[in-house]
Length: 167
Image (cartoon, rainbow, N blue to C red; front, side):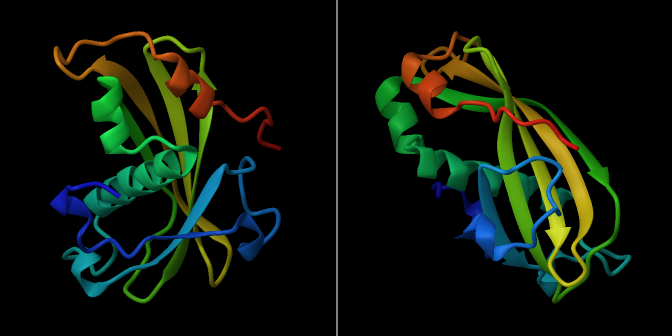
């Protein structure tokens, strides 16, 4: 996925959308993974700590990006990368150790400029409840200068937004 140690306890595995329940998604996802909440993911309230969801959001984004043909190594080769400008996370229900979650992501906005928006939805497998949803505004940067840059053609081709709207 990446060389970052923040993913070392992430047991996120890609799955087929068909392996999830129909009609649970706000929008047809472009990519879905499955993970199980572990005891080390819990906070003092004995539910999944909010910071863990951010790690999972980045992990599913990295898996999806790799599936689209853009890994960190590709970023280095191209001289362009994506960094987060802002995250929005809405917690709907708590999750606990042993809960299995479906984690979906999709690109909802990309005009080929410097930024794009990626959506996320976390659904508890056992009761098909959305437990968290959010989005990240990603910005394309020149990896030498760190400054925002218009996305290269390969990014525009790979990071196409979905065309369907939530019901």
